[in-house]
Image (cartoon, rainbow, N blue to C red; front, side):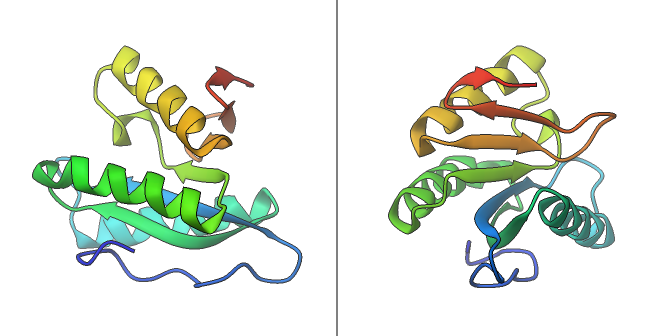
Length: 132
């Protein structure tokens, strides 16, 4: 977990659930309550998908993006976590094409799936290709 992270998630998956990590970036206009609400929604989403949130990688300021991104990838690889949950594409980037690129790159780097928890439909990118 990032040293300046949001409240901690469970440190290990519960029961038969598969571990997942969350990536959350504080978007412009998000206060502490909005961050906590988003984290609560991520936990609920992972539970609906049969996953257990094992780590939260939180980027409180844009200047921390590269460090948080690297920590997310290294953490997933070293812990064998092949699922990452993100609230929405905006948490990757405000430009849709760049957000899609980042999502696909992350799926490739962790050799797994990146889930969007928000929006009208739950969508997933697996190993760099969309599996909506």
